[in-house]
Each structure stands twice: as structure tokens, then as C-alpha cells.
Length: 166
Image (cartoon, rainbow, N blue to C red; front, side):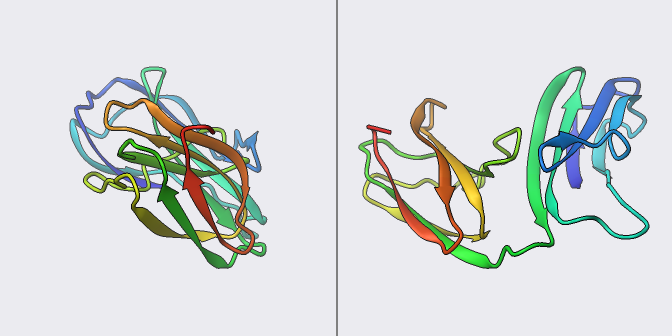
């Protein structure tokens, strides 16, 4: 996992938690370490096995001073061909943030729309995702929930309509 950072201070406490199929991997995790990377730059952490990683869902969670800041998950191995997932905004509110996370993940991960994209009411957005089971959370620009749905089967891809009734 690679990331850019700013605003850090050497000596701050940080952790990088790894989960494999929802279970903590203490061997790959860095727990309560003292930051030595300076105020700004880029950093990375990894999980490895000399024989190769086993198939599964791998999730990294970065924490600074006890606050989780960012997380993301990725499938390794297995049958996860890329499929299309179209999200249609059938609400009257803008979807400014869209979180699409594998159902086994502990956290929502990053905003799949990025810093500037918005899905307006009546509009849609198509994503390329590895086949699997997903949870979805859409937030408006004030960070209020527009829609939230769990256990969406994307083994073959799908179209999903955000609606206020969810």
C-alpha cells in the first residue's frame, strides 16, 4: 500500500493494520510505531510471504494517533474477473461521495468518485470492479447518507439504482 502524506510530525504514533479475509494479520501489521518519515512525502507498507500470498481479500488500514485515516481492500487470486457496475442516482440529491467496498472489508475504503466527480440526480456512473460481493454507501456533499446497501452481488456485474427508500 502506497500513499502520499502531509502534516505528520516525527514521533507521532502510527499503525498499519492488515486484514486477510476479515481476520487481522499481526505478522504483516505495524502496530504503534513511532513516525520517522518527516512532515510530508510518500510512504508504503507491505504484507508478504516468501511462498506467495494466499488467495483472499487483503485490507490495509492506516491509523495516526489512534485515528483511522484511510483504508482500502483488494482481492488477491481467486476468480475475480473485472465486471461493470453501474450506479444510477434515482434520488433528488447529488451523490458527492460513493464508497464501494467488498462486503468482507472492515472499512468503507476510499471515495470511488475521486476529488471532483459528482453523480447528479438522474445521472449514472459505471465502475470497473473485480467480481464479488459488495457494500455501497452514497453521501451528499454535506456527508449525509443518500443511500446505503449491503451484499450487492457483482459476480456478473450489475446496475444498481440509488433510491431514498434504501
